Length: 140
Image 1: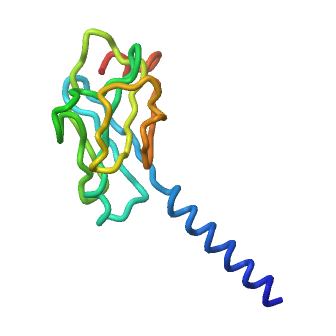
Image 2 (image 1 turned 120 degrees about the horizontal axis):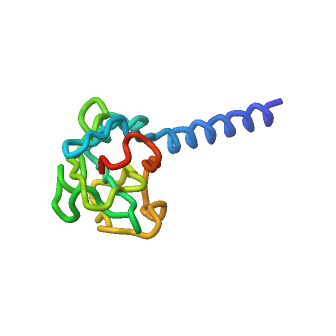
Image 3 (image 1 turned 90 degrees about the horizontal axis):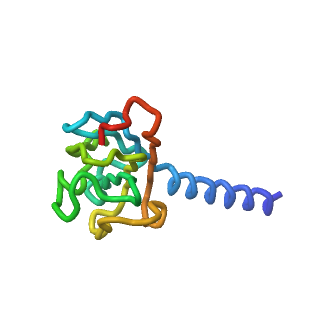
């Protein structure tokens, strides 16, 4: 009986640890053409927000940072506010984006300007939204 109880405690501890690691989520809630894209991060403790940033990528022929690469906060990436919100300015380009992704990465991560596969970026959370065929197509 004691061995069974110990096994149960270990399983509960492992499940609790795994759910803590996997609980981070990021959303894209609004895309306003030539204005902003915004969303929320969930699953981080508020004191952890300063350790992370949100990088937005758009996909045309490959994935590119949006709106500008190498320009720092509010132009290449967004900080997370005290309530988990993030936002970054947008610009409409000559070629409409087929997809948009918001990627939660460590604050000191040197985000690549472009990538063939968005999932290769080491992230804590990611959301990818298809834009083709939606009312949001052409906004980015």
